[in-house]
Image 1 (cartoon, rainbow, N blue to C red):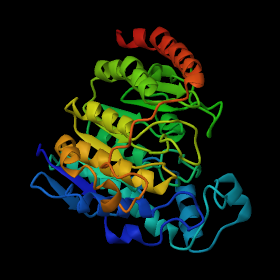
Image 2: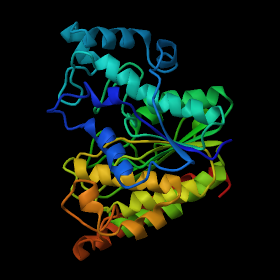
Image 3: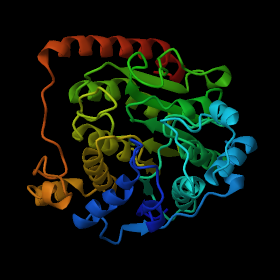
Length: 379
């Protein structure tokens, strides 16, 4: 396998994205590529910008129902029965309908399938699709800004090639669509670190939701309390998640890198700096497995762009040198005036009044994971 990193994007993904009033801002992907390019992160023999191939109907049907795809395609042409729309989650504030949407969605999803294909063909070790990460889409229903589930489709492509897949989701929202797809299986382990469903959409993803049948123990959830800060998140990952990844020993890793865990995101309540997702990505890369990374949530647009550009640098393995050489240029080069210290955020100290409650909640979650899931994996 070539040790190449590919950034998957094209000009068509800059057009006809989600409606302007929708919080899911699809300009983030193109702007992330611009930021990475301006900081030299797309240069080098070990990386390449790759144009995606559109997802074929046959590929979509490895997960989505034919009926749902028919309705989605018709809605893209302006034809939608209100009763059907209601039952399929279409035409809501979270999942609006717009002309030409099917063209955009099949290309965004196709970008993840393109990444999977490059990995399976041995042409790339790491692939990044910032337009992907649509983890809430179900087989026959749209949900939470997600219509087609690129993550499930990519996992299916890897499984069809006899690969053992680990899906790691660090978006602030529980990856319910992906979990549901593999809930009764063990050829794909799903791990979701997210703000607890007690305080955030979609209201799911508790430790006890660990799979059924042969899939028991292969759906892993790490619900986090409001206000979770960098050190607490690191503890949850290192004590509760990393041992399970190592025990499962996958052939390939899919990682959803939503940036809505960052402090100040308008749709969530965690308190991370972008140092944490970058450090988690670094740990995952160090496992040495082929890796497909995607975007996801992130509703403070500038923070999300900087976080994804930083994580792309980590995926390329040159982030330490880059950060040392580019200190002071972050605000200028990423068109963000909030912070001028490179791509990495300044360190923040969580409110001391909440830290004890956060630590207690995470301790309880880790104890439950270790008690209920670790023994199933020989830990």
